[in-house]
Length: 325
Image 1 (spheres, rainbow, N blue to C red):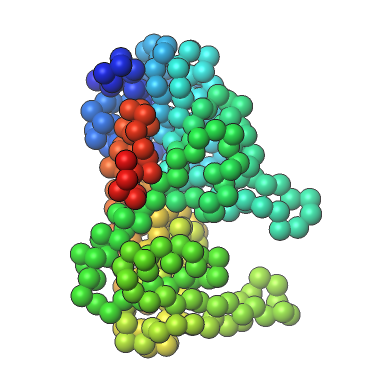
Image 2 (tube, helix red, strand yellow; image 1 turned 90 degrees about the vertical axis):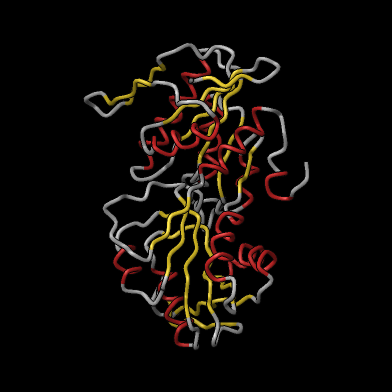
């Protein structure tokens, strides 16, 4: 079944890009629908063609695309899908971006730089999206870039449940890998009721972009330290933080992140690090070829499915996190 109908006869239809169709199928299974059959391919010059194989007129459309590498190709494909839905008279279009692309470029650090995260929002608006849905945005201000509703979903409950099951009896300390992640770490301390530590980076003024020393601020000796971040990209920051924590007497170090970007040397760095477990979600595809025994992947599909159902039924997405209707 490709449509879910509400009591007021609205039709929910689910659409998937090609970057990670398995996630869309899993989300659809929780909703009781299958992604709509889509014909998508590249022309010889690299241009993308998209066409849906059934009528979408009047539907409540949810378009899922995970923006893994090559990011630009998958962004363009999702934009074309949104445009096709608009031109085929879909009633409402929600672009579901489990990992928001270009999220780290959310402000200008120097002159003559773009604010790429804002441009992404503008592109989806121009394509015809009425609403965006994303998981753990790099910064909350991105919600203000889109001129329409933005559903900001949080993976913390899912990740915290895993921590509570596996490390509930340990003496835990939440660790922010840098000053910019302190607010995220504080949400964890509120949930788990444990202390906070911060990794302070001291940079070498004579060597640009080089960290001279990592200072640990907080109680970590004799404790299981949970380094929390929104993404693991090349793994450099998180593995260096693990070394600093171990040197300060931490008995165990666990890395927890929503988005497993895992670019370049990330797998080798994590494999050879002092981290005992790496916990991530599947907002991005984690290849079966990755040989990392310490990697735990939790499914984000139930959370996305519940949020889609709340939006479709005009319910409260906020109630998924604060318990209020």
